[in-house]
Length: 187
Image (cartoon, rainbow, N blue to C red; front, side, top):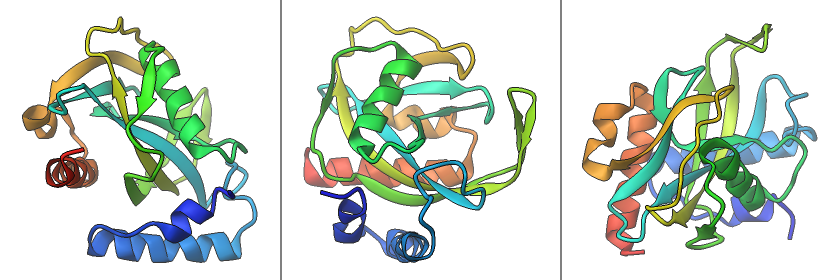
């Protein structure tokens, strides 16, 4: 299965996802380099909302560039196995090894604005992340490790406290949407 099919087949949860899906599909039709950062306008990222067994806490990282608590995730960088990318990013950013997908289906489809910033001494212009996200489970007692070049902390955050930790209003909307989906589906 192509990396495009899960996006095409994704059933939007709300109006935001309907519009974002429409734009992502439009980008897929117009660009052939969305899996790489060569596309400086928009490119695919894969993230994970990592939960504990009780589905009441999320494993989050304090992201250096955004200076906020965030889910783990990153650029596809040419890899078309987006679930693999999400799992790899969780491993790299949290140190956790045993990561289980709760489902292989997409959890969320979002367009995330990225402001201009400096990374590794070079300026990165504003662009869009065409974000796919997956729901993953990790043992809450697994040892955690910071990845200093990307984050300054890793910890479990109770769902009811995520809005207190996150300083990014647009991400709070996404986290709240995901937590509502988890609650509604009793995954």
